[in-house]
Length: 203
Image (cartoon, rainbow, N blue to C red; front, side, top):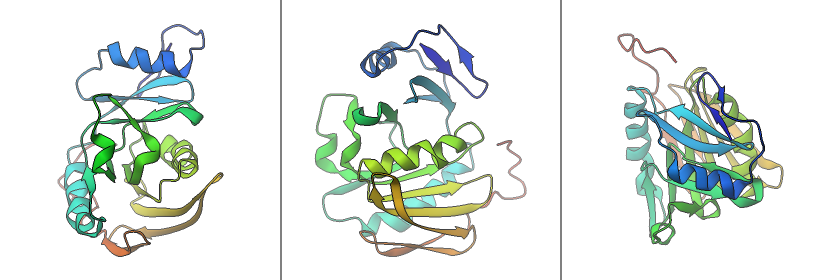
């Protein structure tokens, strides 16, 4: 099993099946302040969001929640969504799915049930957010994927999911309004997504 953190550490080198990795997650004691995902055959531990990310997530919530179709819920709870075809399991920062998707005793939720996903990048997750997750969310048919690039200070929305990931995208710097296509069909005002001068937090 491979355990990867901000500074990757390896425990054993033998490859493990996706189901075995999910079973490992069930018994893994995750350090406080970290979340665990399965990416490219490894269990990846990454730190939870920086303090000022909370403000950004709250702003996203306040703006987008009203545009969800009836029966859909916008969440930040630490749920794990699995994508068996790609052998991935992600814990998105913000996501929306129909309320029926949560009506289960399993801790492994169906990734194809996702309606919307937003990821806030950090130095430890940015590469996966910009590459691996684009492909997996797109192939799973997730209609909208929002990437808030906290290092570059820009927001990107991807839509038109396909076997290659996504066919359409739009990027705006923080401070501008980002058009969110159907099925949300609104604008996301990214003013306030920037880190304030007094928020001296290393990314």
